[in-house]
Length: 401
Ligand SMILES: *Cc1c(COP(=O)(O)O)cnc(C)c1O
Image (cartoon, rainbow, N blue to C red; front, top):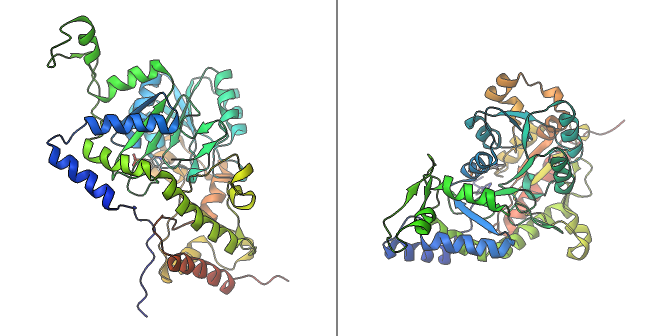
């Protein structure tokens, strides 16, 4: 039988994105310029964040924020092992070390309680880096409270979280800094790219200079030759992490489509949620309240970057890997987010990490499959995913007694 596959992820790129790129290509100015400036301004308005900086990736953005916060070989960061390696690796690039903190018992997000426990014994922490897994905001109020009690910064890895929201504002604006990712599979995509958000003018000033080779044009504009466009000063050895106009042009179109794209993902999530809720071999994902209570009193808006299908393995005769294989054999593109960092050679060896010290992360890893949830999925594709999951679950259901 020749059935077409349902891809795991695909960016939603239309005529508007293509025309925006064409315009930039014809303009003669390809790198960071007017489009990027407008993209940043529009993101500031959208998120009500006073400072936004477009960067060439979320990884670069996290790095610049930690650098600006003074993360270095004399201190450490706390983050979740349930993330992509970049979240932790950027600290190592600054000579800093990483303390991993398990996720909550019932979610995929870092546990505020476990952060508190770590801070009882560990003294040299500089920054807490929560990851809003799949687009569900972490418990930022509690985390911020702990951070301020200990004089620490918070940096939200918001790679999944555009445009997730809480009653306090958009994810990415809830800590000292936040960083979105515009990687191809993410909820706003420019191919590669990212955006730093901060409300701290001091951090903003440092990030602005660090991002562009340590160049400070304003110093020269202030003190000398305000009319000379060729003057600039270098105040430190910075980095080259700017986002070019070609990509910002795509980002500006995608930003305008943010809620259109979110709505489409929401419709898919709703279908999955209601199709699966009556099967006891599936544990409903956290943070999907909007489906049962609808918008009115939903305080949290999940950006729905990932739909985690969590299996109740006690009810099944097969494990996660086998279940995933079955889905793939039925033509469903799937993934697993994440292979926790304590299972990765580098992190495991550097800190002699043991999986049993992260029971919740390990459980999530062993039970979860990411299902396709991209805006342009057809109704038929969504139905095929649902059918594949329910058929597999029924086929391998463990009859009790
Ligand atoms: C995608 C991702 C990153 C890295 O984003 P880039 O833009 O590719 O650098 C970081 N953290 C998490 C949680 C991610 O999913």
